[in-house]
Length: 448
Image (cartoon, one colour):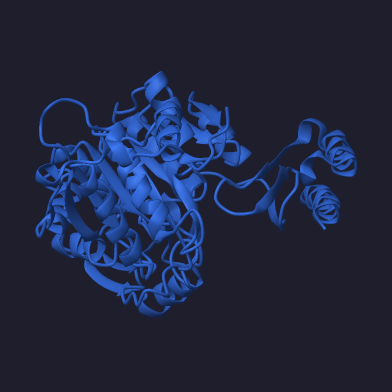
């Protein structure tokens, strides 16, 4: 059964328009607070956010909602999504909340929820919360004496920095490395550069001056062009690009070439295989990961388990089948030995550890396979179900016939914005481009 308010990554939309309004955010706080009041102890919720202007509005509305049902609130301010997940668990909170729309522009925002163990909520729990959201909760509010309190946790940043540093061997430091990090003017703008500096690196930081509007704006992992230029200009050893809530990472090598999540997973998989650290003979990725990654892993005797798009589905498969490495081509890298969700900083540190171990340039370390030509195009639509149109179904069937066994085709609506993503890959670039354009044209006409 589809969920009413929750998408693939929490509740998301345009800030100050339903469902991301202060009224609804307060109701989310009440519903989630009631859903996670289990037992007689004093309950508490951890709330973090990224740097969007609307974060102030949503944060205060959530505080009102949670305190009105008797939950105490711990506020950590701008912090990466994985930091909120980690702190939720380490501080024994009953619930964690991250206010962020991840890689989206500043005028979007979202509410992500984490269970006490730091993992994102299951579909079942999200449906339970949605049931409460559609009810009148006025009779379930706390009495005046039992209202919750709110306070700020001043050392939250230091706690996360220390956690991230401890994912590296004790005797390893980054001395001698010149690193440029692009924090996307987002949630990691303080903690990520600080962690790298404390580990001994020479750190040059860009995208670290958030003003409420410039998150992900021509910067970060969705726009690595600025980082590429800076790496070349400063003759850096490596560039690190986070996204707005710092749960994604892309790397730029010393030559200015962008390294995506598929290559990063290949680096970690081979290194951990050699060190005997892989929990299973393979990793987990989505249907969007390049066929070149699958072939590379096969050459190592490893499998690539594929899931639908969304880091939550990758993580669910990892937990169910015992994998400890997974992720997405976009840069969500989940290393479950350390984190309960994608963590851009921790993933970057693991890549740096391999670079130091091998003693070779990043361009050599992070190029493990030749990716197959892969074309991805987005078609924006305002409503309806263009994928069900006869003309679109015919175009897709024709494209599959043309590709045959020489490639893959993935067409899906985005879970976070009103676009349909059309992706194809194969050994023949011209054929791949042709089938994508054919489908995009059909979808655009149906959407119009």
